Length: 245
Image (cartoon, rainbow, N blue to C red):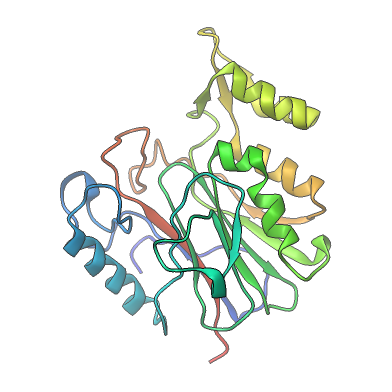
């Protein structure tokens, strides 16, 4: 499946998860080639074809539950989602063959499941959603103790690339003092932020101990879409579902 990424984590083998890259589709120019985002000025026909390619390659039994992502802390169960229209930044499913999905191009995708392998969730965490508590709210939506939940951090902007203003650092540190170690000052007065470390700190505060992934940089690795590199950028998908077939 091209250079798509399969999470390296230990959940049940009935739980399937993957993050796409920009390869494998039909989009052109800055959206080349597997752009899965509907709202980025790409040709709609190409996007829909790319989504069909994704569904076919992954042998999905139904269309993923695509969200209208708005940098919120809102989590929706799949039975409350109208595909492409429901404003939320995380989806959770308690049934097999329901695919939770988030789209990113520098923001952090986080996939979740539990030890029993009967619940899955996907969250979209830009710094705003991360600060507002999207990851903690996703954890709270599980019917499990936090120590029985796994999280995998997918491709996002790396700690040497993610420049933010002082107000971003102040907000995180005021909320959780440990977050200060996730920021490095620059001479310009800006800060370099480690979104992976920020996510881990907040997940640990929520009680998680099983946290995997990280180590990507969508801004410097050309196999990924990056909004900061080019606002006319496509979107990658991170997906998770239960497949007991």
